Image 1 (tube, protein in one colour):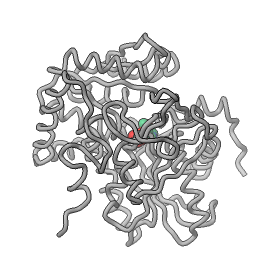
Image 2 (tube, rainbow, N blue to C red):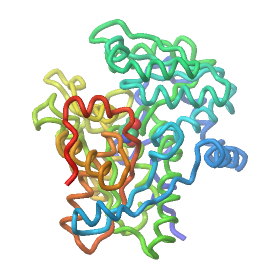
Image 3 (spheres, rainbow, N blue to C red):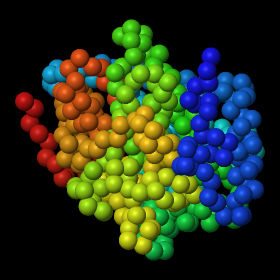
Image 4 (spheres, rainbow, N blue to C red):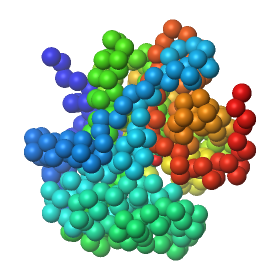
Length: 402
Ligand SMILES: *Cc1c(COP(=O)(O)O)cnc(C)c1O
């Protein structure tokens, strides 16, 4: 059998074509070399996979189901829409898939502490959950402004036993939280695993996080085949950093399934109004890897915006840049308004309140369904929307059901 895509990419230096790599300062070379070696071994270890599978089944509640969204399909009047229900994963989103696995890597490496930055707090909550499970310390760096804005997630992290460290310099948001977490890591890399929250960052994180999310695609392929006797025509996922998308895509990458990544178009196409990095960005290095990014006039990461606070990232995982370049994926967009419309439609037609991030993928799938009446469309419903309800109803009145 010829080697599959997943066995050949990234290469051993972490490159997907020209994208990826590890652009790190000298003090981090040693801890990254250690992590690379350890992950190479662990990814071949039956014991590691058996332990991870057991966690997936007994703690996370996997496999998550696939659901045929019959009412939404009928409403769109076209192709069939199916949902991979990552919103039913413990803690309500796909993020726990990589957080539990990263924590398991930390345990095998003999580390005592998990460290990360968080923007809206979703990654912080998932990591704090994993830390509690494994009895590890957890330190989450967060901009002081974000701490005020995302109060419920801060409380959740603290209840789960994590220490939330405010980043108090500069604009006091995600970028400063990255700096702050980074400095804390350099100071104590001996005892700490830096747990990156998507398929971004220096090698090996894009590969590692893809591997950990690939459970979504593996399950989905098998379940879809069992349910319908064939593969879907399209697989659709929202793309921030790109982890839930790579999770789903990896299951179908060697098949004739069209893969669609949906970027947030926010409130417009001007810089600062959206976070559609692949759509409007250019090649550049940020946060330790080469990819496509949105730059300001000085070449620094540009300010970004989306109503989905988990997808407003100024770059994208290097593998997404590569797959787009070689024509394997199709990159689409969805703006705030269409995402909110899909948020309400899925809630009222199917009884499923999606995360605003996931609603971008749903909105895109609804259009695809209308345009392709004979096709089947599998959407990764990356998370549930409980976290978004107060914000949505305040800004966008609840529509009357028609
Ligand atoms: C964080 C988050 C995302 C975006 O992350 P990716 O790495 O792009 O998948 C998408 N959906 C939900 C529900 C999230 O919490």
